[in-house]
Length: 53
Image (tube, rainbow, N blue to C red; front, side, top):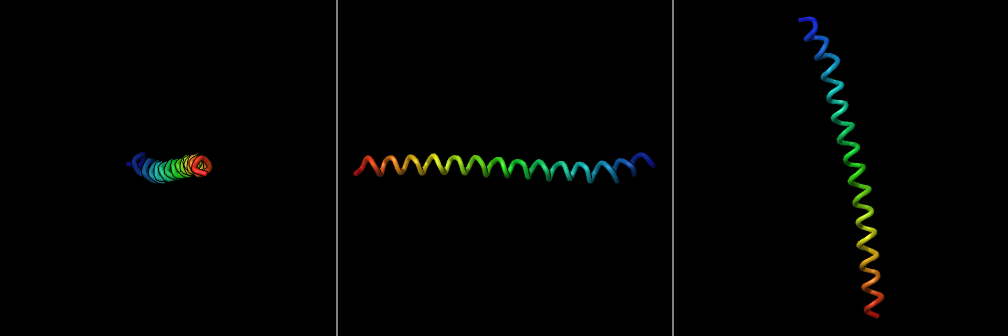
């Protein structure tokens, strides 16, 4: 029983912390990809606007 208590007091917060860190990394990675994609789309729109002149 003592081992089960030790696992839950140490392991559970560690697992939750790792999960939150993983979510944070995924959010930052997606933000970077979105910014890159937005820049690509803006460049495409600008190129089309210049061709239209």
